[in-house]
Image 1 (tube, rainbow, N blue to C red):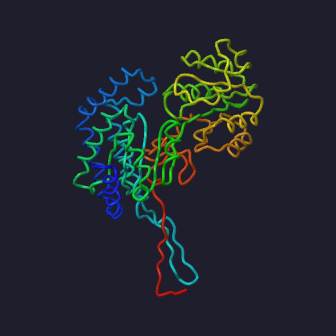
Image 2: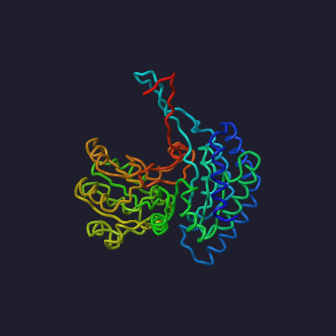
Image 3: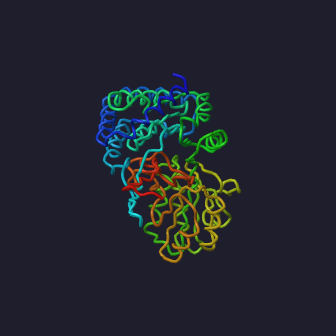
Length: 408
């Protein structure tokens, strides 16, 4: 099929998807979960082809980590499908109702957006995440993954297609594969209602520049943690290590650490990170605390490393930390470790990000961790979603006006 034919079929599917009973959506999600488990060996075989090519191309470890599927991760994907299904119903629900003085009853009802196009890099799991959330929210979805995951994406799409073939209309979930397909998709605003790019800045900018439909961008995560002078030392080290080292190649990992100059555990914090294998690039004051810290450049404070590299700055006040984040942040995830409620309140009021975290790891800005079941990605845009996009964030609302013969 051509890209236009795929988009046309997806648009036709939306007419049926919106009106399906919730039980049928759940049946489709269960079918995908069962198919993933049944075909796990075949999926891993195809994933190994992508990993072998990644090794030949000498891809960065962060990209390889995102690309890798395991038996455990496939089981998790299957469970994700069931978890998404178990979420509260989204499509058709009435979120508000009121009566006007003329006795008209006004309802706001949640409905799908229509056809969602999603362009993403590296992560084959996004094929399943996107399909599951689209089904739950009543949307059709057209997926375009990166060439580094071609075999994995294709196999996962085949498994999904077989699972839903007798349950959902043709075109509910589609896959395109070439760069030329992307350029064509971006012109099809007649069929595609929303485009969601998820990946590096170059991809985001390309889509923003060429898309003829609305775009919700899932951009880089240049995430900061500010450690205030009164932060609880018992929680600081576990949080910093988790935020940076548990999985450094993901968008909600800490990329920059701001330490108040009066925080008594600053030296120990730097030492712990260094001993965990993190390369630190910091200011003169941080180098004075540990000579193993390398001198940071201005570019370091604006870099999303996606590796075990961390920029560090010693600040004199919460205001300096806030100003630094305002200058360098990417509106993704920002965290503060502090006890003073006034300092915390100032931080929350001054910082603009899709998630603000108090006394916890930045790694919690994730759809599953926030109770959404899964996520299409983490939106760094504000219209119409900000932060992790679950099924609810893939819908809009319309008005239902119920009368008894009223005229204006």
